[in-house]
Image 1 (spheres, rainbow, N blue to C red):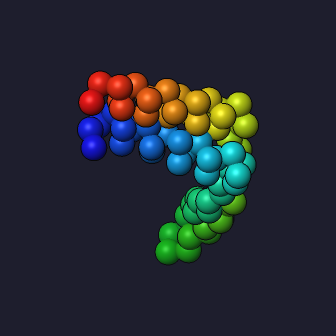
Image 2: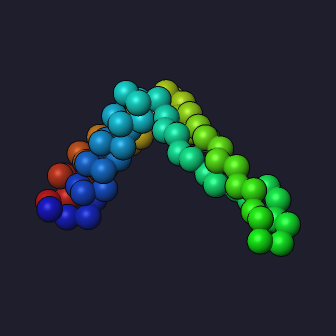
Length: 73
């Protein structure tokens, strides 16, 4: 497999994952206050939404790269 085919497959898989999950979330620890030996830490939950048009674009682009990579071989 050449690099173009691998990149096409990765784009398709990433696009499908983004399309079906809609995004991902993670937790972030932030130090709110630090007074001497006492430290106040806040845990925040962040969400990142992936637009459907971006996921579909990645799938289409991955398919184009995959087809173009197969033509050169």
